[in-house]
Amino acid sequence: MPQLAVANTLWAEYEQLDKPVRAGVRKAMAKFQTLTTVELRSDKGLQLSVVSMARDPRIRTIRITAFWRGVILAPDDGSETYLLLKVLPHDEAVMWASKRIYSVNAATHRLEVRDVAAIEQLKSAQAATALPSRLFAQFSDRTLHELGIDDQTLEAVRTVTDRAQLTAFGPLLPEDQVEVLQYLAVGFSPRRSFGTW
Image (cartoon, rainbow, N blue to C red; front, top):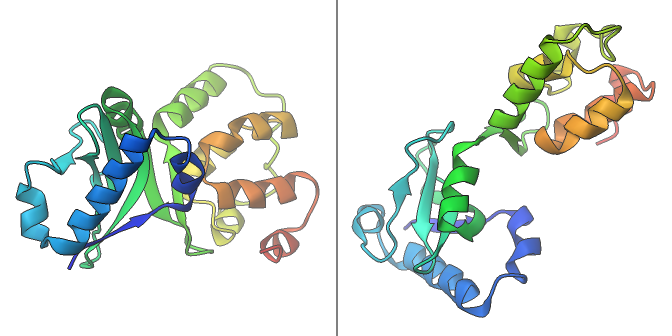
């Protein structure tokens, strides 16, 4: 039977949602517990939909109320566990969903999210300017990969020139990767940075 898990980041926002929206979330969760995967896909009330512009092919939306949608991450590992990531008004949900990619960190095995559109804008803006020196120039790509920095984050981080800029980039990058980079930026060794978890 399918299950709908809730992302930790959503719980902080959940209590701020209006009562009918919270009721819609609970109703959607109940449907996931009672319907089969085939029934979920065809349920007209739930409207499980692929986001056509999504960067991550696993992103879907579900109907919470007539105006609100839930953004979910569909399983790609053969399981039937979906993850509710965000609840937003319809157009905002589609926009939010279309810009994000989820992955599992190779070092920590935690789920990470990144705003791909924002990262691409930052990278292109940085490439257009001459950079005096880069904050992580002394670390090889291999070292950063071993610390869990994936290729997409690495490409963006290679343009960072100082700690203030890293702080500005932080909200756009996966949380665990930012934490490692912050330790490196203040002078921790790669070994010590990874050992902070």
